[in-house]
Length: 465
Image 1 (tube, rainbow, N blue to C red):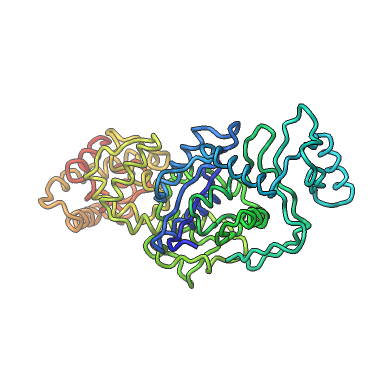
Image 2: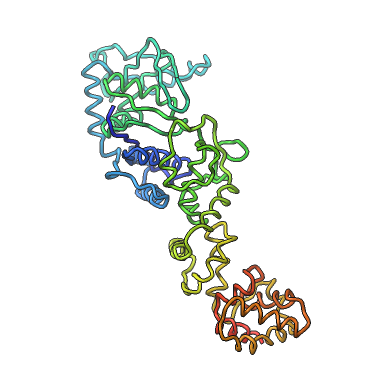
């Protein structure tokens, strides 16, 4: 086995990068990064009909957004077809494979017979030991692997333990189709070997492939990588994750306002743990992650936990950095732009406290760069009575007399005014918040006034009196 750890992420570009794939990529990335190794990226694009450049780009975009940069150039499996064919020819030459001329009708009959007997379909080996002299004319044969017939194939999986399967249950897999194109099972083994992959970390839906692939490794005399099959992600109801549970493309989570740091933290905690730690920085994930600590049970995707984690990362991100992040988010999603960055920076300590997503953060910031005259939501509109307009109008002169526009001076001014008009502070605060923010769902009035500045605060009051 090579000294350097080499993992790989090998998605098939038949759609977006989904959550399960993103977690697989993350586990491979963390394991390699924590050991000074490499994570390679291979696009398994041999299915030409289903694979598109747009899907490939979606996968690359998703990985880059998550911050999972791969080492070296991404490899196209489709570009390795000649190499796959060469390996199969080697296997033919060394009696490790054979040409199969069984017709579609014969295969269908085998399948029906197996179904009637309640057994899985296994090719009956009709052509396993027949010479090409018996080959019918006009048929392009498939090339099948001569799977072992006796004994057992054993996989020592790091996550699931010792997997033992009787070789009599193994099929003579097709490695090359009649048109000469390689199948997945053969291509994966050849590519992983040629790429020097030492550890294969992937979903446990690939577990049945592992024993079959191990047989091909052994037949070719190649080292078998370390296998680690990770339990799948389920919804809160325990069912396999689907769109209704949140099985969307990774970029959909970006568009919903989640931070990549929060996504990395959350995905890492699905089937992996480090004591009771819930909030784990990426640096700590790299330091602590080990496939030995991956659990055997499926994990459950929980939007509430993800939101709470995202809120933590928003709250603990530097204010200036968060302004940049929000600006990039608005640009990437085509939902707006930041017109008052200095004012937004002043507002950030206040508005980020309650925001669980960047969307909520942007909603909370709307009062900052709202154009005058403001548009008022329904609840704010109810505060704009004639009586309240006159009441708040009385603050214009008093605000104008404040020399230093500080939170304490603004607070003292409003409190004195409340005493003068013999009203509780809330009776002034509610309409003032509505007038300054255009909504009742906004920070406290003292914070709003400081953020807007003296001239803007007075100007917004003048707009409605």
